[in-house]
Image (cartoon, rainbow, N blue to C red; front, side, top):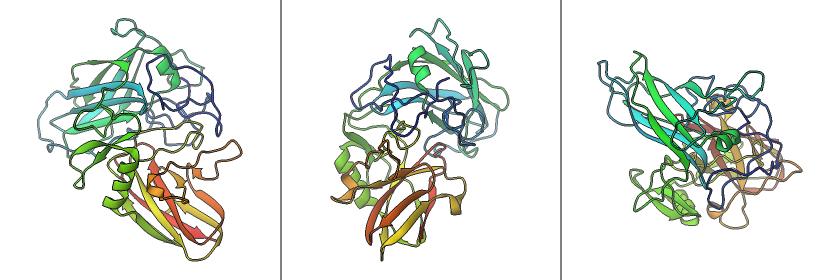
Amino acid sequence: MAAAFAGACGDDDGGDDKAPVDSGNPTDATVREDAGRDAGGMDASTDAGRDAGTDAGKDAGPKDAGPLAAAGNDKPTLSKVGFYNDDLGRRILIAGSDKNGDIDTYTITFYSDAAGNNTVDVDTDGDGSTPGSPTFTLKIAHDTAYADFFAKFAPSQEVITLVRAIKVKVTDVAGNVSDEKLAKLEMAPQAGSSCDPSGFNRCATNSVCSPNANNDTYSCLTRVNARQQACAANAPLTLAAPGNVTGELNNASFWDWPSGCVGGDTMSGFPDRVVKVTLAAPATKLTLSTGGATGTFDSVLYQLPTATPACKDDPAACGDNGCNTCSDGDLVLNNVPAGDLYIVVDKFPPVTDTTFTLTATVE
């Protein structure tokens, strides 16, 4: 299967999606046969541990919520399945509940027609050494204390090109299998008075699904207003460098890393948080990292412009000459003047872990 996050910084494959898309859909990047960053078994980069198809617990989505699991031997329920390609990006969404909290796997079958009659083979390991398969099964990461589960991942361009529909079923540890649901490749429906931060519907172009002050209801706001509200409501974390700060991601996505920042592609719709980093004196080298204190928090870090109020701006684009304002891993900035920098902490799957520690080292 084609890589989901492939390509060098700023590269573009020029390929056309064969599905309806809104303006603003991220440009697809040059295909590389690297393994690792595929969320949901669809490969992408060489970093170990990012393949949701091989590592249990790499499905992305909000923390589980809902009724506590109860004892018993009940069949799991699939409530919603979405297969979308629009301005929020390419994504497959799976939501449901299992009374016993022992949900184990989900199985996806690919079809070349919208009715789900004709299966199509997809090379799910991406190395081309084995025949493709019309189906694959992956683990679902969730908190066993809760009945509800949610999974989200970004399929590769190959899936978007070849597949017109999918069928999904889930299985629990006891072997109980849910009813199977069909989802056609389409744009998610437009949100009405309220929106779903998981991505089962979408706000208008240049709008964001934003939580209220209590984070219990969501509505569409313009991207500028949503960003400013997020900063005002959550008060940007402040980090005096050198040092560190611990915080929680937003319950919605207010920024996306720029195309070319990570493997040439942009993954949309994952929670993020802005941190104001303050330098009392100029620094020859400033290193920002989420790896030291938390270990498993797989982040993308990028800098927002500071010429105007940072909370309303897009991050600087990643040019072909080097991704010097964004990083998958440690973000290293050179010759930084004294003052404030605005850094966004964004995240790869899984998003069940939303607590991060950002550490700043000055040289």
